[in-house]
Length: 580
Ligand code: AMP
Image (cartoon, rainbow, N blue to C red; front, top):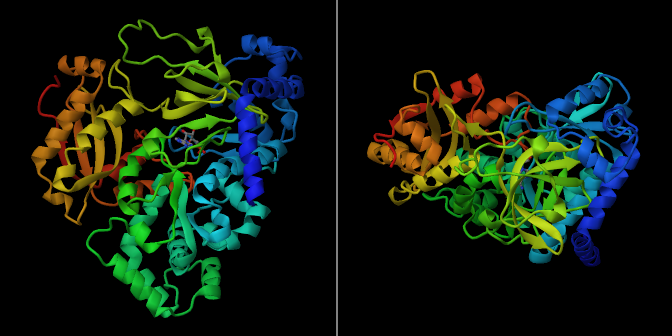
C-alpha cells in the first residue's frame, strides 16, 4: 500500500468509527430492503423493512436454524430462498473450536468486504511498523485445503483457502511472501510446512515479518523446525530437497530457487545448535519487525511460549473475524496480547449484542431466555459489560449467534472496542455447575505458574469431563516442556499434585460446593508426551480442517480425539484435598 493510500484508509477508519450508529442503520436498511422478499424473511417481515419490526419479529438463531436453507441452496435450489444476491461459493468454518464445520454463503459483496477489510486492518500495522511490503517479504505459514463441490456446483472452502485461490493473491505472492503457491496447496501439510520453512530460511535476509493466521500455527512451525533443522540445513548446504518431499509442485518450486549455499547453512546451523531456543525467531530472521498472528481468545494460551521464541519481537493480533462475518480491527498493534481490543467496523455487518450475565453470580436466580432479552445495538453497548455477538449480514445470516462472548473495553470515537472473552459453547459440566473456557483458563494460568521456577512451561492444554466412574471429574491434559531442554520426566510429582489443588481452589463457587458435597471428584491432570497436541492437530487436519484455521478444542468431545491424547499419557495426578 502506498503511503497516501494507507493514510486514506486511516481516514476512512475515522469516518466509520465516528458515524458508527448511522452506518449501522444504513447497513441494516440495505440488507432488509434487498432481502425482505426472500422466503426466509417473508415469513417474519411480510415484505416490510422497518428496523423495529425486524427487532420484534426476526428470531435469534444458530447455525442449525439456517442449515436447512443453506443445504437446500447447496443442493441446487436458487439462493433467493435466503438472500437476493446470488451466492458465488460457500465459506467453510474450521469447526474445531465448537462442533461441525459450518457452510456460510459467499457473494460478490462478501468478497468486496474482505478486500476492504484487509486494507482496514493493515493500515494501523503499517502506521506502526512502516510499509513492510516495500522493504521485504512475509514468512507466513499458509495451508490450503481442497475445495468441496456442492451438488449445485458451488464451491465450499475455508476463508483462507478462498483467499489463496484469488488471482490477486497469486499475483502478489512471489513479491510479498516467501512461500511459493505450490507449498500452500501441497496436499500433505507436513511437506508443505517443511518447504515453507525451507523457503523462509533461504530468504531469511529479506524476511520482515513472520506469522500465520493463528498463534498455534506459528508454534507448530517452530516445533517442526526443532525437529527438522538439521535436515533443512543439509538441504540448504547441498541445494537438494529431501527425498521424502514427494509432492511434485513443491519439488518444482524448490528446483527453481535452490542452489548449494554452505555459508547460509552454517549460519543457520550455528543458531539452531544451541541449548536454549529462546529468541530463535529473532535470530533466524533478524530483520523481522513483528510476529503477525491472532493471539487472543483460545490462542492466548500460546503467547507465553511464542514470546519465549521471539524474545522482544511484538506479537501483533491485527483483526477479529469469523467465516460468518468480519467484525473488528486492532488499532493498537503494539499492545500486549492480553490487552488487545478490536474496534468494530460498522460497515461490515449489522451487529447486535445479548448481555451475558456472570454464570457464577449467585444473585442471578434464573437465566433469561434469549427471546426475553432485549438485544443491544452496537453503539449502545456499555463499557465493562460482556455480550454474546449476534450478526446480520449481507450474505443471508439474520440475527445469527456467532457463539463468541466479548467484553466492551472502551470506545474509539463512537465505535465500541471489544476484548475477546470466550467461545460460548465450550463448557465443562459434571452436574449443574458450568465451567467456561475463561474459568478454566484462569485456573490453569495460576496453576501453571508453579512450574515456572522449576524451569518448565505448560505448552498446551485441553480438558474433558470423565464420567466413566462416579462421581465424574474434570480431566486436564497438559503438555509440558523444559525451558533448557530438561525432560518432563524430571518433574516432581508433588508439584503436579499442587497444580491440581491450585486449579480446584481457583475454580468457581458452584464447582467448589459440588466438590465438597462429593458430587464432583478430584481434578486430574494427565501429562502427555511431547508432540501429543501436534498429533491432535494432525487428526483434525486429516478430518478436513484447514491447518491455517485450526483452533484446538478447549474441551474434547470426540472419542477419537480423546484416544489420541489418552494413548500418550505419561503421568496422572489428582488433587489430594478438597478446595477451600
Ligand atoms: P472460523 O469461522 O473458522 O474462521 O473461526 C472463527 C472463530 O475464531 C471466531 O468465531 C472466534 O471464536 C475465533 N477468532 C477469530 N478471530 C479471533 C481473534 N482475533 N481473537 C479471538 N478469537 C478469534
